[in-house]
Every structure is written in structure tokens, then in C-alpha cells.
Amino acid sequence: MRKRFSALDDSISADGKEEWLQTRPGERCLIRTSAADTGGDFSVVEIISQPGDGTAVHIHRNEDEHFVILEGTARFLCGDRTFDAPAGTSVSGLRNIPHAWCNPFDTPFRMVVIASPGGCEDAFRVIARGGDIDMLALGASFQIEVVGPPMLSHR
Image (cartoon, rainbow, N blue to C red; front, side, top):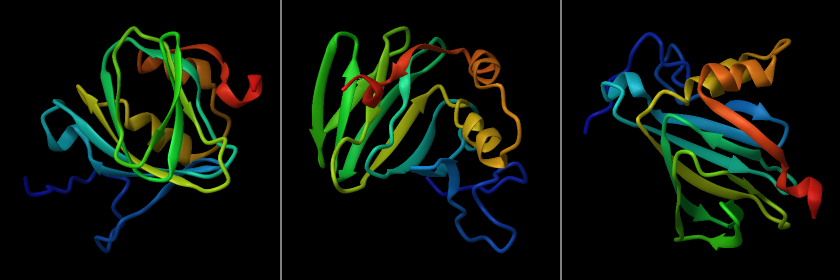
């Protein structure tokens, strides 16, 4: 599929070069394919996570997420299972199931996240713009519910 660029695609700068979004101090992401490019069917986001980074335990009410670890190792929580996912591993975080990921290791990891349907990648754009963001309200607007602390907070 050939990438179609839209005026709303904040991950591409005016000169057509990729723009990595800083979404947390230890996380950068690049929206490779937005929901706008697929008629809402899916989105693809590449994430680089530094040591010590991770998400809060959360539930997506609207989409399934599929993670492919490209480099390094991620630690995942899916439902009641916690496990390490080295490069080459694929993990599905299905809607309505609590999940999270983190990097408790000494090296960064890189992964691709496919969300189906797409649209939740727009939250990354909002976060990257900065400012005073009510994260609970932002999550609610994307039907993402935080149900627990980041995984690394309870090592």
C-alpha cells in the first residue's frame, strides 16, 4: 500500500521527512500509517521505549492493538499474565482486556503497534503538542480507560 499524506498527518513535516513525536520522557513514536490513510480501518505506529519507560495499565474499549517487537525486549501485562517479549515476538492486546508494557531492561526496545480500527494514534499527537493535558479526559475521549499504575511502579 502506498502511503498517502494528508494535511492532518502531524508525523510528517512540511518537507516530507518523518517527525518523531515525544510522548513521554522515555518514549518517542512515529505514526507510520494513520487512520485517515486507511478509512479508519487501522493505524500503524512505531515506538521506541527507553529503559524505565512504560504505560499505565489500561483498557481500550474501541480497538484491538497488535504489537511486534523489532529490537530489544519489552515486558507486557495482558489480562492476568506478565511476560517478556524479545525481538520477533508479536503480542495482541484485545479490546476490553487490561494491558500495559514497559522497559525494565538496560537497553531501548523498538516496536510497531497496529490498532484496529485506527484513530487512537491521534492521542499521541495531542500529547506531543504538550501543554496542560488532562490525561484522564484525553483517554476518555478515545475510549481508553486507565485501570492501574505503570507496571514499573509496582516492581
